Image: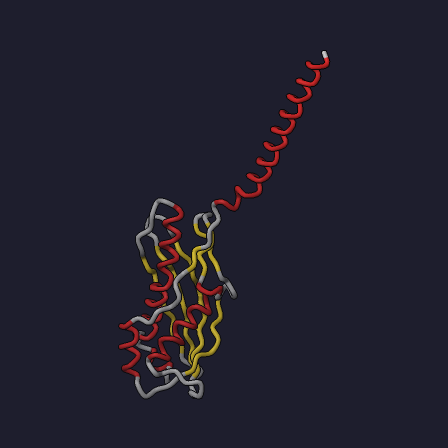
Length: 199
């Protein structure tokens, strides 16, 4: 009887130990499961577009400075993609800051930017969003205003090839933000009213 009691106690301890380990595993899974599908998708830093640079150099001899950019949704730094994770502008910037920096980079390389210029250009990001499904596209609307009182507005629907697989679709969406902004800059500087903004 004593040996049987010892054997049963050993079995009981083993079962209790296994049950305890299983409980711990379930707790860990409950905590980590919501995080498993969450990933951050960062857009590339802005890169100068050759066509934009050539257009801006036709305004050689003029100078502007860049003022603050605002947004319909101020300070927005991310947009959730398919529940897989957020699409973010590079370096933790707000989207309006990313667009502002794009103009600053383009104007600087084109030698039109000057901190001492009498004319200041400011911007308002009127809208920014995307669809990563069928007909995937970034949709961006922007208004540019000059200190001389003139302004212009443009909108861009930048289409790109998406994917049925969520992670791949979100990666492609993030990769497409920078060229979408390049197109926005291009539409602004080729707008018939752009020369008026520089005066």
